[in-house]
Image (cartoon, rainbow, N blue to C red; front, side, top):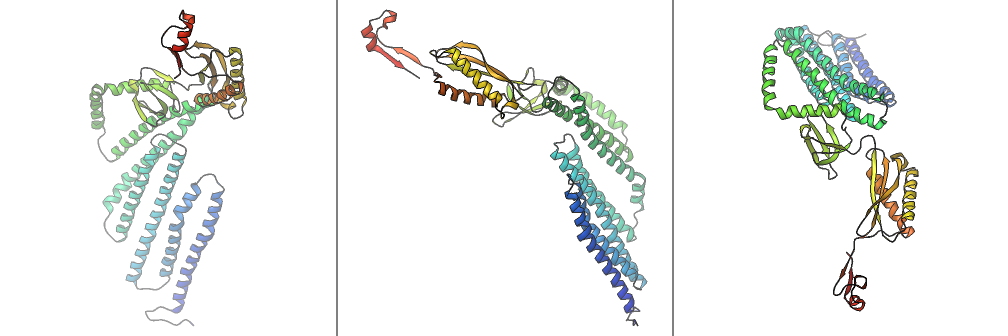
Length: 455
């Protein structure tokens, strides 16, 4: 029924081989268009992008592996010459091995990239992001090395020295790297949560205050913990590479003593930064004035504090240079405003209008969450050259005092206009010639020589 073709092949063998290869192509198509689509639909129902990263990394390699696997089996079903079969088998085996290595490396690379994006979105601090980037690069290099070794081994080229060393030390180094990365990620994840839980138990601080202090402590402690883990991992890897650690530690001790003598200002900065953080003088997100510089605290560590002022200028202040730290936004802030009215106004009426405007502002649903106590007139603060100054005080949520004062000024100006209350401006009276009558001068001469100027 099946006739024999040239070269010893029958049409039946060729047909079976083609059917096997076609079945694997169909399996690859089924995986590509059904399983992948199903996985993507399930991934859309989750909040994280981890599922999408895994599917994107494995989709193409798995499809190609299925097709090559079908080609490999179909070749085995065909009775070819021994040499030709050997070459084809080696080629397909090398291709499958390289694709398997690529799939694993792509999966690890995608997982590390996903976590880097998650860390950036969560504003995670410390060494997680740069080290994860290095881990991705190392994954590519290790995958390339494994691919070269597999290819050389299948081609019959001697690789025993390299594979022997990897079998003895390589897996230990890989395990150290993986465990250290897991420890670094765990430190960056669990220390902020532990600090937040610990600080939340303290009474007397608002939720926002606890959050800002937790962020500041997390930046410092997570970074320090990750550096410790990284140093331990480096020493363990050096030990596996049979590099003596004792001379390095001795040299580091001597260098530390030399640096200690030459970097006294650095040590001063570190000690000052430690006390700033422990004493909770200010945190990330506070508005402070330090070393004659005012601005928003964007970052703080043991060595320096970074401020950004209203002009957008970034100021880097060494902690050792800070003698007095003025915090404008710790726990609560205050509206401290002076309003000037003319001497001819009824002060009781003016104060009642001020108190009414402050009460209306505090009752406004838009501004009520920012105000702790309504702005109210405290006292007549000064009898100025051209007007009477009235002191207004009120308490607000941290960093909201400037917004509240701006809105209060706007409403007071509008209310004063409606009530006919005059807000004076500086003016002077200049007399030329004789003195005015109430000072003993001639009334007619004074009228002619009198001139009033306002400026």
